[in-house]
Image (cartoon, rainbow, N blue to C red; front, side, top):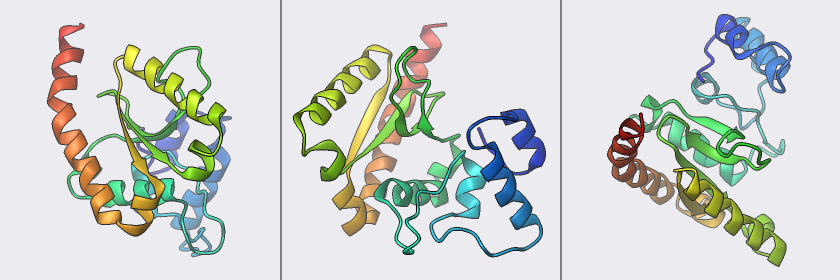
Length: 177
């Protein structure tokens, strides 16, 4: 869902998890305050629901960096993106890092710290992939190191992924109706 102003935020729902923070950012933006978090992006927030994960050091987490790249890209910004999306598989508590819900195309950012050090994390990711696939989702996994070291390549992979899967997903989803 896109949130550009207070009326969009009201439609999103009062009392939701991110409501107060987004409302505060909208007020700061309206009054010209520049106290936004170093990783927050007005354009990015206007395109998707997002809570900044910035560490305060000015360096963004790979997931947020990729999100900012995607949302500021001329082609990709035309889609309705959602981050930390929880409704991909009913009755499951995991999230997709970034996705286009209407196309059932998701992007996961994988870093060694969270996805590779422990067998349980690895197995949980495989289960997540299986459940998403069975629910009709296509998921692209991008390494955090690639996002940090070669952000242009990471963005190009997202472009190619969406260009490849969009027509297929539209065809599949339309035939399911």
